[in-house]
Image (cartoon, rainbow, N blue to C red; front, side):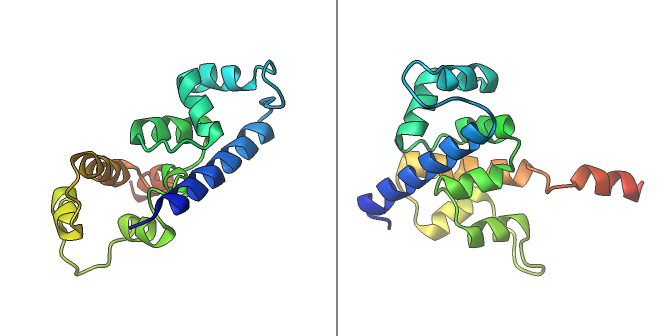
Length: 148
């Protein structure tokens, strides 16, 4: 289990990554009245208070918010989940490409096997797993068209 210092460091790293992403996209985050946070909140549909929490390095693990963030930034949800510390690269690779021949289990069964007992952590885990299962891999639409 991660300790609180690891969690805080991860949240700060995510905040720095997000700040870089927004700055690169032209949002001015230089001062209190620069308007960049408000503009991004309006463009993304994420509340201004949540954008502020993300940029301050508060730990935000709501997969719906992280999904909206991925959409607004035009980056894969998996990358946002890794940056936010929800998944590591190995877990993301496994979710995207389960090994053939291995038994498939439901997110609830996975939570059981991983010993996730806390109700909130369990809901987050199941929600994240279901979201990743529904997220098509990059270029999936092109592959589908080519197969037709």
